[in-house]
Amino acid sequence: MSTQLSRLLKLLGATLLSVLVGLVPTAVSAPAIGAITGTTVPKTVVLDGAQLVTIKAQLATGTASSSQKAALNSLLAQANTALTAGPWSVTDKNVVPPSGDKHDYLSHAPYQWASKPKTPGNPLGCPYVNRDGQRNPEADAISDHAERAQAFDAIPNLALAWFYTHDAKYAQRAALDIRTWFLDPATKMNPNLTYSQVIPCVDRVSGTGIIDTSQSISSVFDAFAILDSGAPGWTSEDHSAATTWVGQFLNWMQTSPQAKLELAATNNHGSYIDMQNATAALYIGNKTMAKSIVESVKKNRIAKQIKADGSQPLELTRTISWHYANFNLTALGRLAEIGKQVGVDLWGYTAPNGGSIDKAVDFLIPAAEKGVSAWSYPQISPLDQSISTDILHAAAEQGHDKLAAAAIPLVPKPPIGDLWPIRPSTLCLDNPLK
View 1 (cartoon, helix red, strand yellow):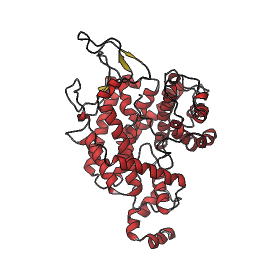
View 2: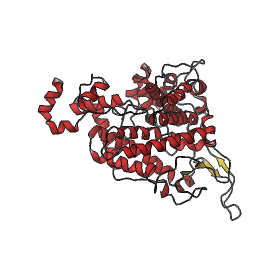
View 3: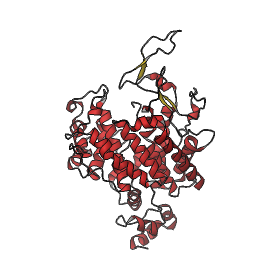
View 4: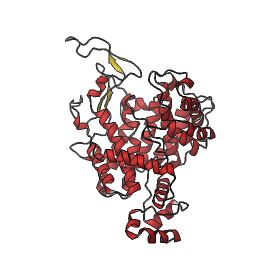
């Protein structure tokens, strides 16, 4: 036992120390941390598990920074709210998918609107037309989209709150939410998105609805991994069931007609299904597949999406171009974080045309600092500068981008606070505008 830990035993007492399992010197390597404290380093898929253990030690020993303490308070406020929200289930919806099975996820394509008056002869107002960036309120009549967003937000917050505090209530609630959405036969979601973002009056197959999960489910896989590291109430049976569900979901994501269309997408949809599939593969232990997906991002995403000046033409033509430029970069940033897990350096990659992730981040900096006056692309909704916070942190710390590092203090913080100091990864921008 180190001198530091001996002193902590005298100061805190053995009982408290057994709770604060992360009490270790921050300079100790991840394997040594596990050996000294008995703590299992989470096998996370985007987050760096060893880094989480180091942050936990800093919080426990009183060596955390003020920004880490503020971020923990913000995280716990969200987790405390999540303790009494939910649980959520696809079976809550009051409509039945075309399959007749309420366990199938169902949502309405958000930007699709009726083009004709709704009459007895045309009750749906067919045909539907696309109004990019304008969400149709009719989409909210189906509860799966909103409940999925709430569940996929709550589960990672609860899991991380347990990891840092070791308060069992957070783990137990995360487990309840996971079982309800993914595992319990009475309430679970079938592992497919066959009826995601359907368009009324249209029978053709579309892959765009996969964005409903691909934008945020990777954080849920990280939550699974955090709970796997020894959370109370999360059993080996839960782990096995979760692994089975993710494996079935990944298989659908590789073989279904919808998934094949989405994989061929060159814009943010392609980036997100890559991110989703890589994290699913990594969670179930298929590192070879995950590495192959991340390696393909160089040619299939970065080279096709980012120009030498850092612009993203496929996103800048959208009516809410600021959102989509940040949205796609969030996926690429997370793919770069996955790359660290599998030995692929996306931050260091420059495409033959000169495009790179860090250049795309730098392209956003003027508007992130100054707002809409520095953004000359379509933006029919208010420009939220704070959504660049995580990707700026990632570029600064992981991509060693000095411009991004200098910009961070100048960019407004998100309403929930800057969680990067305790959750160092780019958080998906999961809002209704998808």
